[in-house]
Image (cartoon, rainbow, N blue to C red; front, side, top):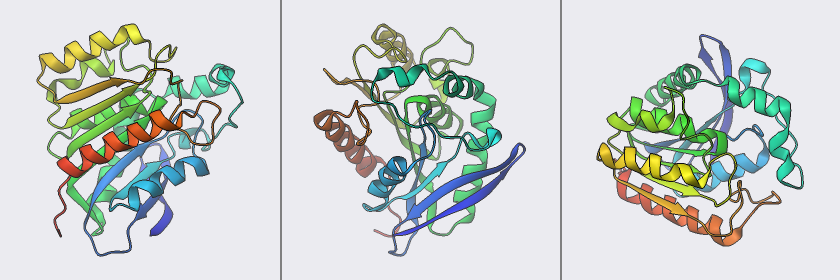
Length: 248
């Protein structure tokens, strides 16, 4: 695989972005991977590598670049979600800022011959859930498949709530939820599903019994191997069906 960290120019500064792609000739379907609120770390790099090994060009931006690219050390229990600085930064990332950053990522895909801008997907974990939905809505002709894993704040009272943005989505989505998730309450699922059905968005919404928030992260206290592997299986199936390869 070919991997590197590049700085993408945005109106707010340079956004470090981890880029990894297969060594085989491209172009490869491109996938944007949006990080969680703990920030960039090797665990996320490995998740991007897992995607690249099966043929995808993957970009993962450091969404905290405006504040120096901070990352936070995982704790051994659910109280890690209460870190006040982490919560401050996560809430500071508004829809317009996510959209600004996604524009820079799209420009990178357009300019790299290893990436196929006509066949794109997006994945987001926790805090990375909202920008996945915004990207799928803003680039409906490019993003054919998208997925949120224990995505936070997908349904809120805000006019910018992700569930209010799904009307332009053309791609297919997979939403993986965990029960008793304080950042994505189970009782908000019907609101999201109603919006998706109203606008004809093809989707699968799956609740993984017994899983905790963050269950897909392999080095965290909350890792649930069975639920995580099931989620990866769903993602690979979705991408294989919806992200065609120009050179295949």
